[in-house]
Length: 529
Ligand code: 1PR
Image (cartoon, rainbow, N blue to C red; front, top):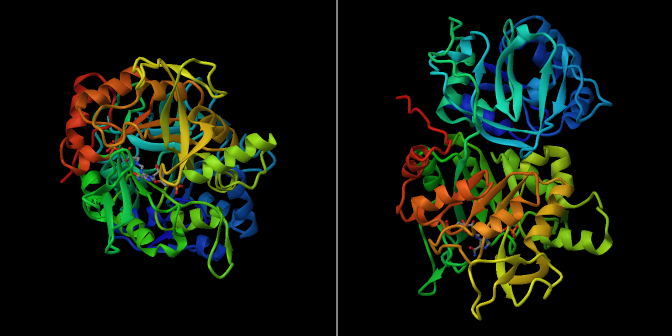
């Protein structure tokens, strides 16, 4: 029996699913006594340090946790579960950590995108039983803006490079804690978790121990989901957002099955977009929640879900906050949520008033679950203009002439699935959303969506140049070269595709092999039978 400390973090369901997939059963801590009587304790956390410590105090878990960890019984801390062991964090300096390991938690100070999101390796510093069966060149999934700084090097189990070398895991007797997420690191992550759970007897070092690690570029599979006219939830795909063919909603398969297939094929992340979410209310949309619950049982890479996340009033006049909607998605297995139309309305209100309210969905959800959990899905289309000063929006000079040969354009934001254009541009939207607490930009492009013409490189460069959070390039992938192009001609950290995967035109593995052959750092999953 594994005891799991659930303080309400966003990734608890993923950890439970991973532990249960390894044949173990989980007992959730209800009272401090459950911690003290635990045989093995797993403490997963993701989100904000301050919020976590506050809840641990409110639930009287702090002293019990200290007693358990000092008793040197098996303990696995994940992400915030690692940071909690240290004295304090720059993220909430007013709140003390457990102070069981000397040192503190610092924010990344680098000129790379923060948060550090994606698959990165480990520089192994000492042997451990969690390394049984590892080669040493595996990559693990990280999603964080802060990292620990240990005063005593003897507790450092591994470091990782991201701008500089930071501590990515620690070990002190039977206490092990990782900054990366084994529950979201595919089969490699499950192996590490299994080694901890099954008390792999021998402490060992991986076969190889490379020095220096590199963050991989991510390949994301996107499933645009909606109900077809018969009410079945299907994966569909638009051509420039038009999902109908001969009047019918294109049906490209079942969401749970396709997600599983892409996981098996090596997708680094999977995104579900409920493309009619703006119409209906997510919490009444049980089928979508069920898709997430079913998928997260067998898919151990990060899951993002978007569509309809906003404050809402149901037909009985009951008001629901976007935070409640997001919480339900996290409890159902999501690791990140994506906000589309509501983000456009929030930024318009911000620009109109010149100040943040603190109550927008972006601010509320990032405050509780951390900015790395909030993705902004942008649905822009090109608007060609005669000259750079034709409009009050940032205009780019384009190599792709307009219908009348125009050489300038701006990117107009839309809402409600591209149905309504707004007087706002994609660059300003991304900048303000970052300011309000978003952690990542999913940069779609209506003009390129479903066209197989390649990504809109000019749009991606314009947005990546204006934000310091990671950007996902999306829309238009049609050939292997398009992925090479987006990773060599832009700063995008990830590339998302849909149509080519659904129509089995190019398997994910081929994309990865092609990128690997062309010296683009990617994650390879060594399939362990
Ligand atoms: O506005 O918060 O309710 O969220 C709705 C979400 O659904 C938004 O994220 C929006 O991007 C998405 N969406 C809405 N309508 C459509 C549509 O297609 N009619 N899909 C839609 C957006 C864009 C990508 C697509 C890439 C890659 N599709 O998700 O997967 O363009 O496609 P490709 O590789 O085939 O070119 P809210």
